[in-house]
Image (tube, rainbow, N blue to C red; front, side, top):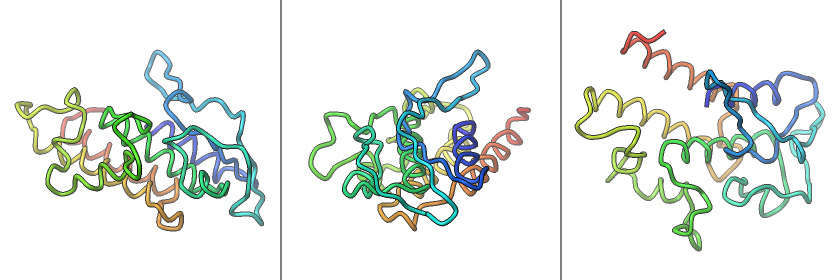
Amino acid sequence: MIDVASALEYLHHGYSVSIIHCDMKPTNVLLDNDMVGYLTDFGIAKLLTNKESIAHTTTFATIGYIAPEYGLEGLISKRSDVYSYGIMLLETFTKKKPNDEMFTGDLNLRSCMHNSLPMSWPDHIIDADLLTLDEKNFNQKLQFVSSIMELAMNCTANIPVERMKMTDVVASLKKIKQKLCSCYWIT
């Protein structure tokens, strides 16, 4: 997920023209033999000049991953990619797809996670394959997962200006990884 966040950071801030992917989802991420993630499928990507921070488009991305302003009004920005990235984080750590049948009406992956707070946060929400109650250092690992879930919730705020910038997302993920590695002596 750090690889994908870094790719988005580069697309958003690496040029004088920002590239908005517009269709962030797991099927647009490829993993190589070393589990390095690569962002793919730029078929509906849009360019934003220095003077533009938002654009209007009639091209729509995948339901479930699409930011509210993009789906409702066709407005794209760097923050719409951040939203989609946050949904991917939630999906990765919960093993629930945002377009699952269980999400009907106003209920979606983000609202489901938000509604679960604080009663079952996050040990009953996260993918059981990632963390089990009888696991060694459960509470410590739970703190790291909680930090990632909190980051995902900050990426998926309903109001675009309340979402994080990709530079901050990357910095947060690297900080979480560094703390995790120092606890387990992983290099």
